[in-house]
Amino acid sequence: MNILVAGDTFVSNEFFIENLLSPSVVNLFQNAEFPILNLESPVLYENQKYDKILKTGPHLQMSKQVATSILRNLHVKGVTLANNHILDYGSKGLMSTMDILKSEEIKFVGAGKNISDAS
Image 1 (cartoon, rainbow, N blue to C red):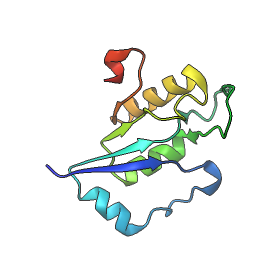
Image 2: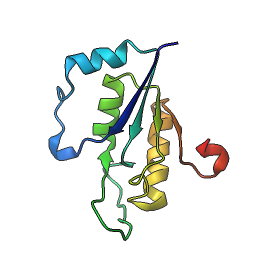
Image 3: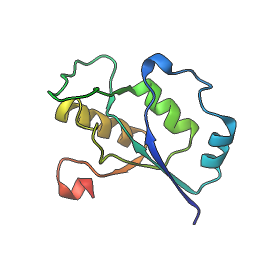
Image 4: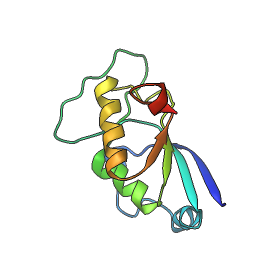
């Protein structure tokens, strides 16, 4: 099996454009049987309010539109969520992320409602 594992992936709404991804990167992902990447931020619904957690450093978040566009274009099958930004918008942000990933049929590991879900 050809598995591609990529590192931290984050695109802010301000810098998102449809053709952001290099064709060579898209081709690399599309040729993998199971491309995986680290989703370096929570994915939030545009029409809901989320509260930032108290922390030092930036609060990262991707909108559903941006995240799903990138994940679809790369044909991502799975993401890791165990990182330092996944809880930037608390448990509500994490739940939003998991709901969106499930709706896109993208598997995830590293975070969840319980240890079983996170596994």
